[in-house]
Amino acid sequence: MINYKSFKILSFLAILLFLNSCGNFFRGADARKVSPDPRERVKKNLEEGKGFRLNTAVKDRIGRGGNFEFASSNELWRASLDIIEFMPLTSANYSGGIIITDWYSNNTDPNETIKITIRFLSNEIRSDAIDINVFYKKCEANNKCVVQKNNKNIEAELRREILKKATIYQKQTKSQNKSYYPTPKMGGEAN
Image 1 (cartoon, rainbow, N blue to C red):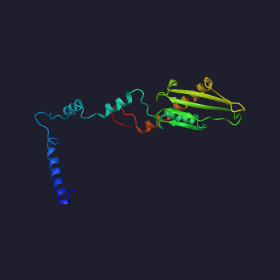
Image 2: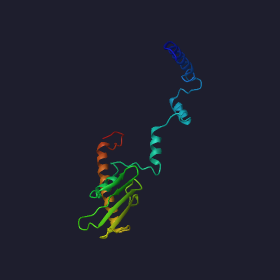
Image 3: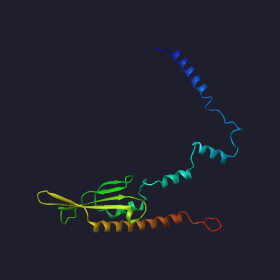
């Protein structure tokens, strides 16, 4: 077992060894090899992979296909939840871009239930941006149930209502943003 005095000496030697080895790491730049112009230094660092520019990093992230970031500010997402608000939800996954309702029955016929899934294929408000599936389940007295898909009328009606509401949300968002970010005048001055 190492005694306290030996431990102190070994710790001191380890610290000295560590500090001595850091000499190459903290070495300054050679003024003859480094340009005094900061733009040239930034360009060189970017070429060597030592940094990034925020505007290109954001453009790259936005421009990639298949990466949909959903949030409560997404007009399609909000409109879909508002249209099917009367139905209980099984899953509502922003990052996966899918809403799945539970089986729902109005009180007129408890043996007939409906289930809806909405998949988001894009953030844009277009008819092909959402994929809607409606499932019907009809059960007989002995709990024998039949599930069917393919009700194009309800799917088309849901799509139309969601797009209509999403367009309203988008217009509201744009009008709110105009008040926060006024358009510049011709002379380059803001309102």
